[in-house]
Length: 289
Image 1 (cartoon, helix red, strand yellow):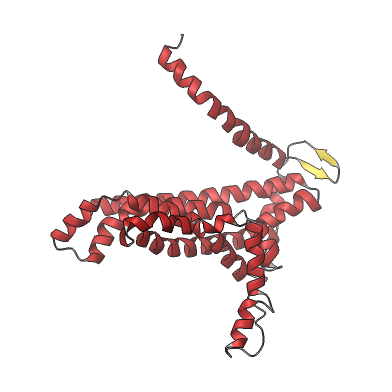
Image 2: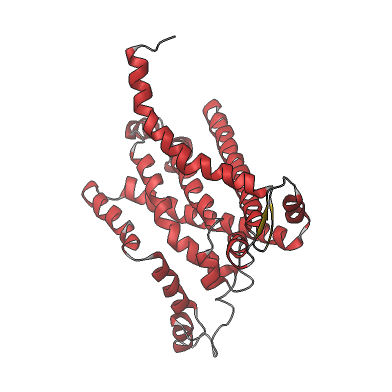
């Protein structure tokens, strides 16, 4: 059955994006999935299908530890960034004068001017044994000797990642807040609602899409970050992405690395899907109330 002109025009418009999606997303994932069922002995790659890699990942305590640690750090980073980003976005949208909003957005984007690696190294300078923080604390007499527990651990990883991803959390929340109809707030005020009631009943539910977007923007990449844990995490701050890098590069075991990558992807998808489901339930309950 031949397509009509509108159908052909629509297919021609989506064909290029669809081809790019297949080439850049579906094909690599399919290759990763296929590779996870293979095995490798140094330079020999055995393509005989097997679930040995999945069994090894499931039974190995070190992989489970790294998965749970990555999940914990990513959740902490997401909570910190969104908690700090929401008040900042609220101030930019509802408190700051209109003629200063562009300036505030501009200031939020300043961290993007510097390299991500440079920002990580700056945190090493700040948190180091002889770094800025220790020197400052000793200078004002709060400590007598440098603190050695603020770098090369999970705290340093969470702090560095939170600083790096904070602008990515502020901007989507701010954009959604800007779309909130101010007449709703004025009507609620006329009906006698307090500022807190107006925030809980109107601003918070209407801004939740921005919160969801910020949460996913921060959570998904941080759980797969390997540069920050490698530079400021030490042995106790390494995450699952560091083990994936080791399997692909040092251990020369790409099938096991592919399996770990798929398990991490499944973990991220499950947590992200759970959060979206909880958010939808919350919005339905708020709408019913």
